[in-house]
Picture (cartoon, rainbow, N blue to C red):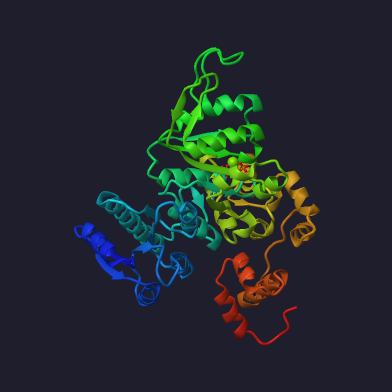
Length: 464
Ligand SMILES: Nc1ncnc2c1ncn2[C@@H]1O[C@H](COP(=O)(O)OP(=O)(O)OP(=O)(O)O)[C@@H](O)[C@H]1O
Ligand SMILES: [Mg+2]
């Protein structure tokens, strides 16, 4: 392993290097931001120990550089006492951990070892991925660029105790994502306690979180542990957090800020150590503006925001996930389905999937249970889904209408050269994205450079 130490106070740097002398790592030391940038332009250290206060640069700029260049390394930031907001910003920019001055040898060695282990695991995963084309990450299928970014964020935030705020439309995998963060965190051997804030009646919620003692209210016939106590040492996943009653929000804020709470009907203060993950399919900032969500709680929870892309933004993942579900459900139901007809593949790729992965999953399960065969055809889809396609004002509707429910027999006359189709698809995407190439590239799930290269190779023509 190679470590770059960026620290302007030379006696401190010497102490750190001495602390780390028994670790299996080569340490290089620079004292200024300028030296750091010049070193990083020619080397890729696996770990960076970064003092955030440098004489000539802001540590944040170095973090940004590491993140923008996609450098594969763990950055451990070193901050002065009391710079909590800087730590939060640094973690958002992808820092792996932070060390607050002064720290002892044990803390430094442990943090560096954790970072080494992370880098080692990441290298292993990368090499497996390239060997076997693995596209599943902790139960999440898909290898689109947008999902790779999600996996990277999970990898970066999981080891810390920072609160993660997951947003995303219904059915995009928020719970799956929370579970992945918990599982690979240092708390993974403990339970992740899930509390669904929309499923529990308002007046029972307080006792659900904090527990109660016998006789605290009518119906409290025995002492009961709350989610906070069960999650002690582990993770508390607050699902559908936006639905939480505003009065209870202040009690939750106190728990998060102080790590203490009181059971309903009990004056004794309990202390807990909890990692929080929360999720919502609403726009939390809008709820803050409307006065339905406490602003202070929002900022306390939104330390690491993680937005899950909708299924329609995931390019060819749609087909990959659909095929995976088809094979899995066929096996479970003792059926022989192996593939989708080309027309249905087209529908899967072009439909806007308002219910996201959950909707795709339900439809495929329904098809597998109710039909027989090897190839799934369009007409096997549930009737209300087919109706929604016709209602759609997009070309899927018309393609489907033209097919008159049964599929046309394939004919060589209909086959067009791939490059022609590719050009058409790319041009259409650029047009829809109003000429914004990088946006078009995101939706096409390719690199913008690929589009630029292709545009150059085609005969000149107006794009709009
Ligand atoms: N990337 C994925 N690959 C495979 N299955 C997935 C993926 N994402 C989600 N799922 C599956 O889709 C279903 C919905 O996921 P999940 O419950 O995590 O979504 P959610 O965002 O919490 O939805 P809601 O807002 O409705 O609560 C689950 O059965 C989950 O296993
Ligand atoms: Mg959910």
